[in-house]
Image (cartoon, rainbow, N blue to C red):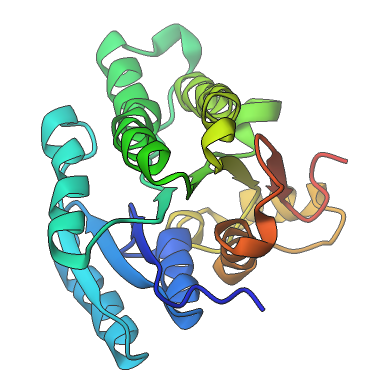
Length: 248
């Protein structure tokens, strides 16, 4: 079940956290993986070694997700080395905090470039390639902030909400070609990002979650694996929360 033997995937932001977990999950199911990273080459190489230890090919592709042309080029680099891609996971992103009244235009633009425009860049590549081949999977990693909003993160919330719109539009446009596009909205997940959260704030966040804990990257990855599989061929345009019941 959920075999990806013979498949090739590009996972962005794959050097740590949710991206790393997704890349390893897809490789464990049989896929070869192009691992995008920006700055943390050491961590990316660790993921590469882990995947190669599973007997799969793993290619490192480096680019700043805010650089549209350089970032778009990682698709071509991946296909040149691994072969035609079957799965795209748009996971790259980033969060900064600022009150709305103090939020600068530069920070707004950079946040949109990193969290939304980057997904557009590779979704455009995927749309062309997948529609020609009459198959493909696009999985966008959004956030609970896209649906509920986040204090001191209007720019991030808006960008991640835009990603949901891109997901639905892509799903409608590509459905006739047998291509699916879905989004995952993680809640509070144990990653390097949340590890730095001070204890009092973390306790308040946990208190909001009916299941009473933070999620694990592997729990997000399990859903991504399903959405990448043949078993999910009739699932498209959907938004899935992995948040412990945060938005019940």
